[in-house]
Length: 457
Ligand SMILES: Cc1cc2nc3c(=O)[nH]c(=O)nc-3n(C[C@H](O)[C@H](O)[C@H](O)COP(=O)(O)OP(=O)(O)OC[C@H]3O[C@@H](n4cnc5c(N)ncnc54)[C@H](O)[C@@H]3O)c2cc1C
Image (cartoon, rainbow, N blue to C red; front, side, top):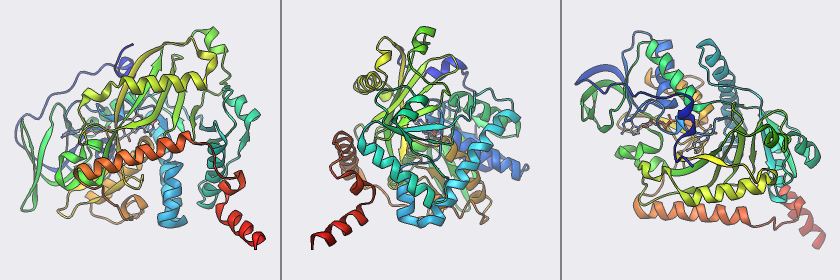
């Protein structure tokens, strides 16, 4: 087993040079993942004369952007429920439409710029493997229809197993979405951004960001960048900067990639459309095939270490890999002989509401983070939001719930860590417990209990 990022084997990386010394510019962007790069891309598209510099601690795409599972999806499930609950139908629908547009635009972007990122819009199949999940996806269908986020069909076990031949599948919905090689996407995006005139300084960790008069001073060990505007796009590392510390929480999540499957192995599982597949647990696990016929199995339990640790030492987690392998064998019993070749983890930026957050801190620092594990498409929308925040204009993007909604914070220090532990414990127990309520009550608790209390009187 190689404890490294499988996607790196599809395109090697030679990190670019660090910041050459002190620099002055219009806009400094800290972090060279999707968020920082899309912000730079849309800014240069709109204002080609702006001098934009990106400061990246490692290489562009070294964070979650270059190592994720490659599901290009809307922020579904819990997020939709929360958005409807907190912000109502109109705001939730607005976010869904923008992110859906981003999915389409991502495919076009790759084509136009000849980025060979294996972008495939073949949809995402959300499956249920127990009755509780079945109720959950039925509720989601109803909510999505209410939010105007599309009309979905709930497929029964037989139809669902024609799409994905796992005997544990009891039902499914197919939603729009795509798959991509995330590493080639972020590396291709970095090339496009450079060709637009943006300078990316790799191997340049930022240590402090301080406001001095009307300028920002961004300090690194190689020199200081003085900029009129600063965008902080370091995802789960946002806590490096005190003003952003409590706005998100760094969580570790893992994935495994098998050896290429033989024709005989491929023939054992029906999967004609090769869609991405995810179950409906709180800590959902998800599967997809790579173009070279490996099966990728991702997700499962969330981990946090120490006091919000972000050290790359946690990219290897044998317990997480053991649990992932166990759930894989349960979902695909036909693939008992499939061997995993790669196992690796990365950092998710968890926002308190599960909804991505964009905005400006009281001192004027612009930020974007909190995708909570679904950032490929949302960061594309996020790039447009960041552009408009930098250009200080109010648009349909700065009006999105990602910006305008209340953004509760995590408690600092040990209280915040204990809160994270409690959340993980509660979700884990919830995933293990069977459906406690009658099925109809789980689907519509309000009307079920009203009817039963009336008939009891
Ligand atoms: C295991 C896993 C699977 C996932 N699967 C999916 C999926 O299938 N679909 C999906 O939509 N999303 C998925 N995600 C989430 C998705 O990858 C992220 O939401 C997205 O990549 C966030 O992009 P970003 O640019 O904000 O962050 P990142 O890509 O993490 O970029 C942040 C960058 O900031 C840099 N940085 C950090 N500190 C500093 C500093 N002090 N100075 C300078 N630079 C710094 C880092 O090196 C990094 O390159 C997954 C995440 C994980 C961990």
